[in-house]
Length: 77
Image 1 (tube, rainbow, N blue to C red):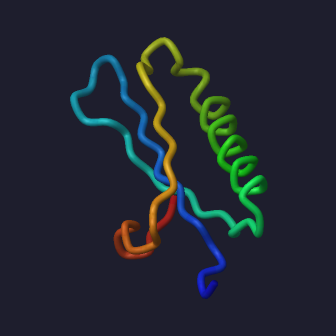
Image 2 (cartoon, rainbow, N blue to C red):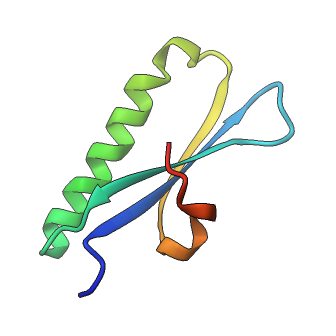
């Protein structure tokens, strides 16, 4: 495995907006599938906690793993 990082794409659909809010997160690659599942759960829980104050306006959260080339220009927020 050459890559030491994995990237997660977070999409947040709001009730008012046509376009979702999209941002990327970078994490260190896990060595096991169970560790990757835990990491995904952690990213989901952190996203929900970070956006909790806007929960009345949010319709759906989508967190997915994406390859590194999907992240445009290497700019990660």
